[in-house]
Length: 496
Ligand code: NAD
Image (cartoon, rainbow, N blue to C red; front, side):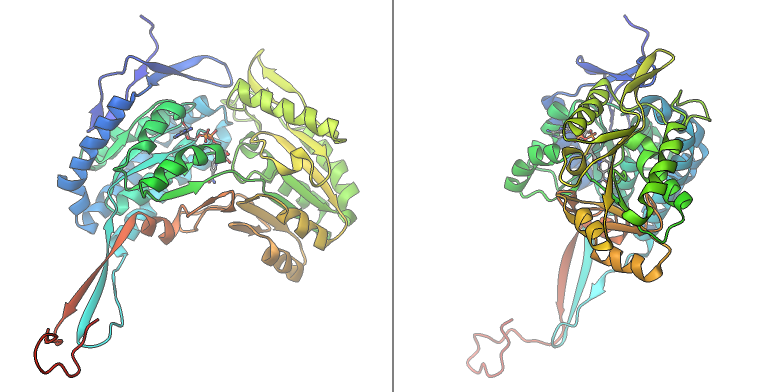
């Protein structure tokens, strides 16, 4: 027997009996196995969903007073805030992301619980201007048992965003974290229990996407699927969900343009690019993966960018000085290398990096890479999800806009300029679900998050996310219209 910890699914308020099939969770910076988790079978998934349906129908959460939901989610926020250091350590280990990033990111995650707790408490129904002596109330009800399929790049942030919105609205949640980084999400089970969430209301189920994720999404009794992942995963689940009339929120990939306009100070432009492009080793859906630089700024920008990128400290993610950590897997290293090779074949010029690397002889690392290329190249059009960035010289403001929009993705984009009018003009014309002016990656629980085109549909965050976890019930209260239709004298009888 191995001494590796095995963390089994969190079901009905406890860690379930471990499955026979298991999968290993690897620290990508050291290639050591951190733990094993369940590879959950179809039979178990179906039985968890059946049990969750009973909990939704008969359990207290779906009928709880909003003030009770507020209290539980607020307490969960307090507990999470008090445990951030332990979550930071775990998140750093399972993702290979630098500890300084994880400290900054995780410190804000309790805000999602606070925000959705507050929404649960203050959200109001409506009364419509219904004609006549009638009161029509609209109330929002939880939708039912919802499945949440989450990725490995921000494991705790993305799961918490989704869980908070769904629980605030009174649903029963089954979350399947990514097989690459499920450990921090698994810890949320006992945390919510301590906060007072009734057992069975948050179920955490692990396994491979192609198996466990698929089994979950194929179940016809789900009320909603909320996916953050790749387009291929969306396509794999969409047809079944459509036939089963299950709505999907899909947060998919991106190819965010970083539009750098000529009025910018070059130092600021380079800092903007570094921040947009290399946070999380380029593994975020809004990575600034296309630097669109105005010709008037270009030469100065490139010279300084090269110096700064070459000086970035790739290293052990647990070292506070490390700026660039690992990528998630050997597959990701290979994918980055393949992008570099194709970019060079297409005439691209590698300005920085371009190679896989190791730290202390181990790990899945890739040098921060910038490649000068042209619009329409493979690197300009397709998502790398790693630190390989396309640099494109643009002749004009118009060209920046047209290159920015010439993409099947439309999730995030940033526009950087000291010229107020130009910044607004360009931002106005960019097709993207999220446009930042003089910023990138900025995010808040109140701010709807989601893309257009193949970047997805629906929103995380904000009122939009909360309402997407509800269904509207219309109650029509008549206090003056008589049901006289089949009387002899039906003058002025009202039908509808
Ligand atoms: P992925 O699509 O491979 O996996 C995401 C989740 O889907 C995992 O839990 C996985 O197990 C599951 N899954 C895979 N196949 C499945 C199937 N057939 N049925 C059901 N579930 C399945 O994505 P990833 O590699 O974890 O994450 C990277 C992708 O996520 C990138 O494209 C990135 O842009 C996107 N992403 C988007 C956002 C956003 O907010 N739009 C945020 C983060 C990541």
